Image (cartoon, rainbow, N blue to C red; front, side, top):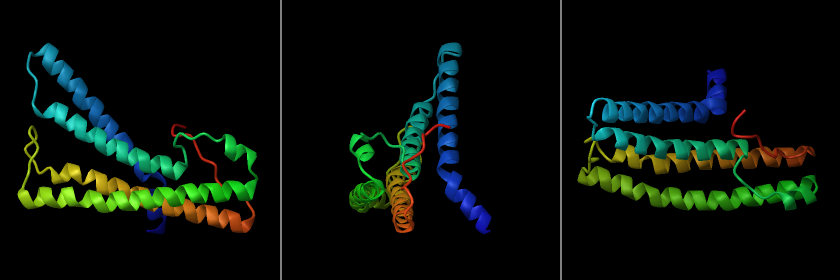
Length: 171
């Protein structure tokens, strides 16, 4: 069980990003074939691709935080020593954490309102709450990844190791 949780922690967002990216590509390709080959298009195809893209963006943001691969200007980081880098990374993660917690709190209300009033999507005709939940879910993953990042940096700082400076998004 512990190995499964560890594997999920390492690969969850990558697999979810792959799943949503594949769904987007398959939906758009099928819509292009249907529109130009069969002179028929569905009302739900564009909507499914759009909502899949929203989920992809949130899972990708959490993955980028985990890998520390968001775009950044690291001229100042390169001029600092180990301790300075750790402090700067911790400050950035703390500022991001405050922002993410505030956004998480604010993003819950639209989901609850959608459930309360029973709003549905135009094309798919299912509850909008299923798609609006992507924002609080994304911020929850971001908060989790920021806490993990801060913990990793504190451990590296305490052990005298260089802090994790990041991976690329694509291997």
